[in-house]
Image (cartoon, rainbow, N blue to C red; front, side, top):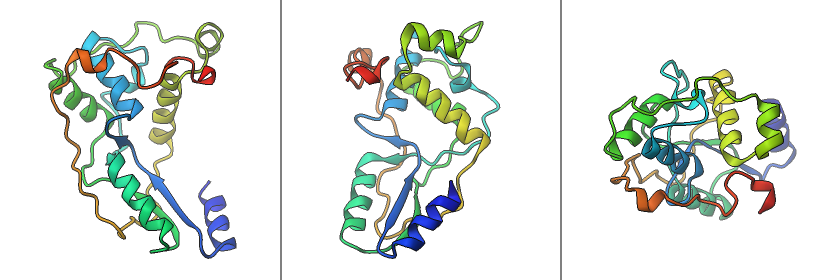
Length: 184
């Protein structure tokens, strides 16, 4: 994928390609989903609770992404860039922070005893946003992305912090059909 990105940027000298890290903010699906898992104490995907997670995420706030896109649209810089936050955490550390914000003990959220079979899961439930997030985590664990220079045209103003997580705020999914995104 890196080669294709480099080819695209070299073919169009005015292109700006921003590769965002894990987004957090009001409507970030993975953080919202993990908060829902922490609140009920269980998660359908063991890899989202992995104590051996190696990939260091650098969560970036959605407003910082919007600022970077605005700056890129104004033509401030061209090329391939990584858009990251300033905090580096593996997924287990992120989940521990979420559990703490939800007044749960770190490590208290449990995964399934037997992981669901992808094809069977797809047949009964469809490929939803949560399954895609689980696959995204697997992809980044196996293919760390850190080769692009960091975007520095705008500053990252928001540190990765979580307000107190209360159940009422997470009773509903971030999308109408959270499990079946293809029905939206």
